[in-house]
Length: 134
Ligand code: THU
Image (tube, rainbow, N blue to C red; front, top):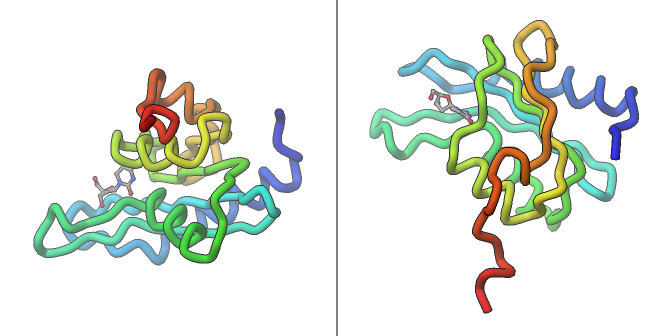
C-alpha cells in the first residue's frame, strides 16, 4: 500500500534532519532513519559509532529499537537517509524482518531523492523470521 504523500514527506524530512545527530567520528558517514508505526507514531534514529568499532550501531536499528522499547512492534514504513542514498546493511535488514516483511522501505539521499522504494521482503528475500522458529 502506498504511503500517504504528506506522511511520506514528514518521514523523509525527519530522516534527513536526524542526520545532524549522528555520532560518526570514525566513518564520517552520517545516517538518519525514521520509522512510522502502525499506530501512527514516528521514531527517528542515527548511527552511533564507538572507539571499539564493532560496538557501533546503525541508524535503522536505533530507530526500530527506540520504537520497540516503547511498545511498538508494527511498522508501516522505514526511511533511511544518507549523503548518497546508501543501502541498509544486512544486520538492519534482519532486524527489520523481525517485525514484518511488508514494511515499506525508502532509501533516500541528502537532497531527498528516492534511490530505492521497496519492502523489507524486497530487501531480504527468504528472510529467517519468527515463523521459522517452530
Ligand atoms: N550505517 C548505518 O547507520 N546504516 C546502514 O544501514 C549502513 C551503515 C552506518 C554504520 C557506520 O556508522 C557508518 O554508517 C559507516 O558504515
